[in-house]
Image (cartoon, rainbow, N blue to C red; front, side, top):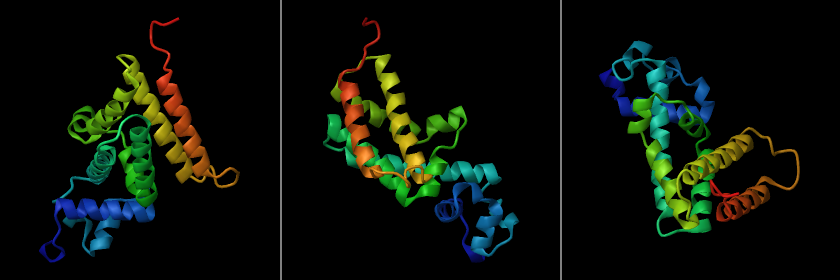
Length: 192
């Protein structure tokens, strides 16, 4: 163990790099152990099992994306903020497809609350201040924004837009324009 210099952080980071290279679903303790040239048992002093490794990679990805998102949002409001956060997620997914897939992993309630997940929600709610939405409309809008961002990114990464015109960038820009317009004219609850 000492010769490989294994730590929980090194094992997690290696798993994240392998996820980007091979795909998140392909990352197992065996794959990570081969990467370090050690027996699988050597990893188990740093991660409990395959699920623990997967959760650690997901938490790393959520943290990285939240850090980038916060930086991108600084000093922005309204549509500029909406586009900045959307672009941050899309760029991260292109740069780190395996980590991005990991960030979609369903976490148990306590782990989710302790993760960077709430930061993502808070960033989206910060964007919505520019649209003057009150509850429960704000929660509905947070869910819509997440669905649009992550749905589009997942389809694009999967190659769904590779065989038709216009290109995905043009569609992305139009979708963000439409989302901005919708948020400005949100059908407030209780309004007929």
